[in-house]
Image (cartoon, rainbow, N blue to C red; front, side):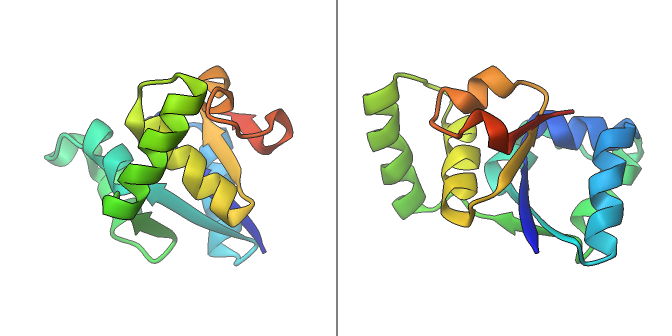
Length: 126
């Protein structure tokens, strides 16, 4: 099963009903891919209320695993940021999740994820 990590842009695209992300959710529903995202990503996009009903249903489902940004991840992201220069720790968490899982990253900003060392062939624009 292929692993896919969703960044903030992917969750926003899902909430807006964009076809690319919906396709990955359908694949997850058919057990063809395993979806994951970071709790930090959720914090970036979550605004609550009825406006995000689609996103709320998705995050409450068993189709996605939400990974916390814990102290170990924080230290790894900081070390990686010192080496590569980026400052967005949320993108850093998405990147280390993808690298750890040999996953594809579904993102609206491939350049940001690539700066963290995720190979271009494992980045899909949504």
